[in-house]
Image 1 (cartoon, rainbow, N blue to C red):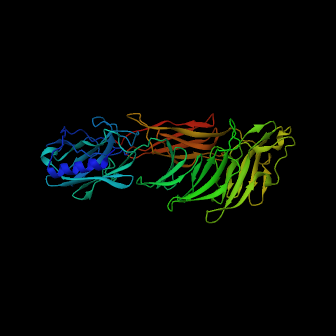
Image 2: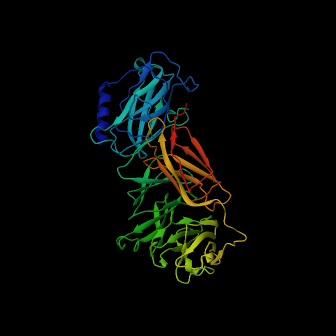
Image 3: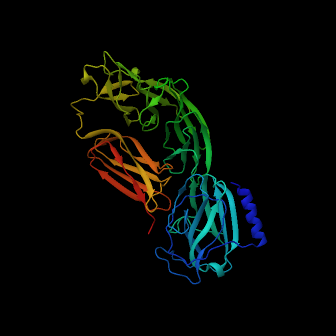
Length: 494
């Protein structure tokens, strides 16, 4: 793409007074708006009517000149608004509503790419051509040679230097956001405060984006299988995996390093250099008040009566910049004996307090299966205590560990919606690990909540939000399997 040449040409054209090939059409009812698309060459055109025509649906109650309800689409004639576009997209149209316009007004458009001003266009409103009210349909950005550059785009529009609420059909958001996805696959992890996104590209490069989509390279590694946010929305915990000594056909020899990063300072610190791999559904995860980190550790490889898997606990320093203590499973007293084999965690386990961790233990080649069961690990006392069968009997209806997953799509086009926020709430009387918090969809519109413990009487609620779409909530109760698949489509505001 050659945006600088396009911009120079556009400026030259404006100076010389040349006209654009625009299409004037009869205004259609305002189209709902999503958000998220890219930009390259800005060619304005509008659908108009010589006299104001009442809009079907929402019309802001104001007599002031107004632009609102912008959306990004591949086809200006079809209401197929999108917030995300595939790599290599060559042209994207931006459509919006206008009302109460008059002769003599000045309109300015500002395009941003990855948080930087990318293209600016300012011109008088041509009332004779566009009229007072209608729908602009033919403003597009394009690069027909190589395709638009991947990145996060934002459009801001001004009338006489007054920023317009174009980003919502309800006229409440002052910009339109959209993205063109990169060529390489990535996964996205939204911070607890919704202000940051940690993206892993090619499974080894971490990029941080702020709420405006501005990217910042944070870390380049070998392979990043796990990443999680701290509650402060400033630090992330992640694993960098080394497979250089891996034995072919096995997981033996894989070594994981544990890192912490400060996203605002752009600094990363090595917390722990592993001798083997971290494991489990979620990898290392934090205790209730983030003093400890726990994970399964080992290759998971089993041979005869041995299994290479055990618990590891890491105690963090107060500044979260280092690990002050490493505690391994064999250091705890009270563990069950397995005379001929190895005792190992049967599942990921769950925190019950900041220093109390519960997990189910199993053993290889054990003839006394009654010795194994649910154990509470007290990290401060270094004790493991078996749950009493008299006080904590097996719970009828427990279904075990599983996941909640699905795909979020556009209800009109069926296109996947990237960057949608999925919030999970889980009502359960028995689950040691309920689903809670938020995640975001990837480029394919997919989301997942992993390491969830299901009971057949649980109730799980998902709330999905995406820019330009109506929020949608679904609820499921009474499970028969430790799995919930939720494929949800979003629609535009009425």
